[in-house]
Image 1 (cartoon, rainbow, N blue to C red):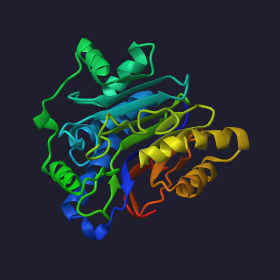
Image 2: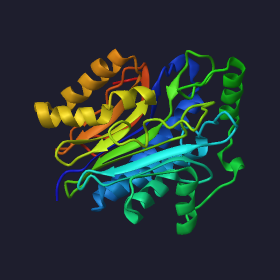
Image 3: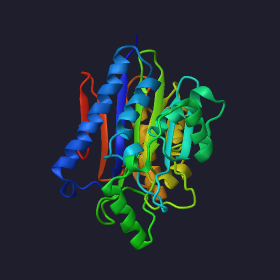
Image 4: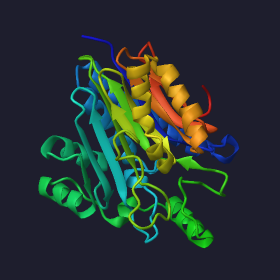
Length: 312
């Protein structure tokens, strides 16, 4: 049996230490550590990378601190429209959902699309119909509501802005709250996943990069698994996650160089902000971001869960 590797993220952006309360920082760190531990337990007992990614994201979806599942931001109409996706690096199989409402854990619905349908991406009512057919849990609007997110919506409505983030207070404190995970299991299989509530005050059925293969996520056993967080429109235009894999496959770059080049150079040149977590077939992890901070965590060589926000 081979080496395992695992990493998670909970968003990147203008995360300023002076604007974060000790309580919120502690909650974020505890949540990321719990997700890491859940994934680690699956991987160390011979479980699949896809299972580890799925269950870790479920943990983050259930926490109101992150912009996914329970903590999702509000759209223009005061509703929660959520996106999620999973991808296996072994056969490049993928399942994704977009603009779903009421589904407690969108990542579980994405898993159902991957395993129980011939399709890749289902949206809104169609995806929700599959969830009902399979008996996946739904929750009321009250479950997804948080005062913090509602305040953000009111601020966005007052400014007539669509926020490509889940800002706390003021336009300069921006955090892209998508959650995600990447894994390498003992069988040598890579997997990635992502889940998000999108952007505050979004209109017109907007869908970002998260459920788009190659933009918000990508996995291929020959190269790497990547999960992104940031300004989705730029990740779509730059096909960011696939670009990292392509540089490894076609240029022979290692993961660290490929990831750094794409995030620090290409994404920045496009004018986009955000970051990625990634792992390659040998278990190397790279987590570059071009913003002041990024909620992230990984298992180190000793198998310890390491959580970071600002520090490298």
